[in-house]
Image 1: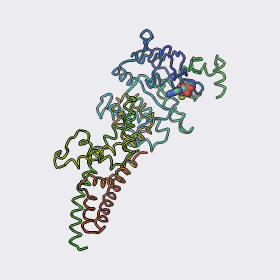
Image 2: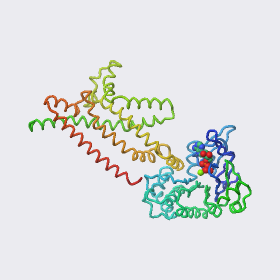
Image 3: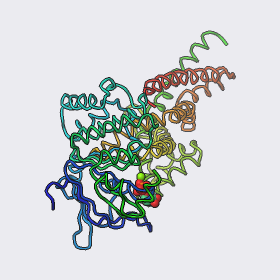
Image 4: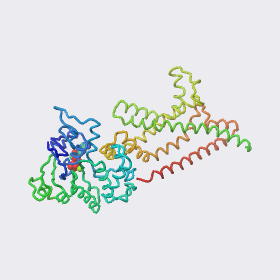
Length: 253
Length: 225
Ligand SMILES: Nc1ncnc2c1ncn2[C@@H]1O[C@H](COP(=O)(O)OP(=O)(O)O)[C@@H](O)[C@H]1O
Ligand SMILES: [Mg+2]
């Protein structure tokens, strides 16, 4: 195994009842790499992220995050890490949802600091320091005491990115971070992600923003029908796709 | 009706009001947490538990509360031949205790359905966000879910609380000397409906105060939507 691999997913299979949604996915993401996942709706992109982030259990395969094995095959049987290890693994990645999923009854500050204090055991002062730094980075330094309902969608998504970054994770997953936003609000969010990319944050981003994917990602993965149809350096894949399905998909943009 | 009679009637009604308040307060103290527990049982993945709880709720909601009070009161005697006359907890005799048990079991069923509705109305994303942040199940429940559920169910819970104030008068079937029971005996002694009207006024004042409190709490929780 490549020592620099932050995410390793091997031969991932996942079905919902009779519907096979992931049909043997292999994906490795190295430290500092930005991978964009594109593809038509229903292709299994969200499911892939949800499997990597423990929100869904896979049927078979192997997942390693930041050197910790989330699950692997033990003969015929799939074995998941125990509770304590799962908790540790969860602190090693962040997930940004399409619809933010901020905690509406918490202030912005508490959204960001709550898990730092009550999961990672940081002191209030430490947590507040981390929170202030992140809000500054997100251009939200004056919003610490606001509640999510008083923020625009773009601001809410930036808070949720700050929340995902708070534990200083090794990798962040984004599931269509701008799809729930009005077009004029996507810019701020994409800029924040772009900044993270320039700081070499390891990221996996499911997105429909092709220009953004081409410019910001190192690598693009095109998924359709539960398989990775094609992957390659971002610029090459967008400008010179090899597979017919990729060509047809990109022609829509 | 003389002034003295009115004053002494009011005094007697107020002493009955202490029992009314007692039934009210104890019922809430027991039935709210019990309702939460029942709601969890109702949503249990264990089919046996879920069905039993479902049956319990349907009986509580589908039969008269007055009958339930009578069953709690007379049940021990008919089932086990136990005499309940001597049972006392502090200043409370078994009549009062039976009323509290009956009311609590009944209201827990109603609260449970309200809580279940509130819990099930929570978006899945709240659990998922909490999970990936590493919160334990109980942290998620108490920090993230429950506070939001409380805000969501407050109007329905308030309805039940106001109904409970009036329902306390059902305890008269157990001869608990709550306010309505006193009003009945005064009315028959005085051959007048005046005591009932005064009692009615007391119920009304109590509920007006409760409504004020609820409005205050709602305001306090309106900082987010
Ligand atoms: N919880 C679920 N239960 C059943 N089917 C699901 C579930 N989640 C996703 N699916 C199905 O899996 C397929 C892939 O969905 P998804 O991963 O959301 O695709 P994408 O994110 O690429 O649009 C779709 O057909 C979808 O209906
Ligand atoms: Mg999706």
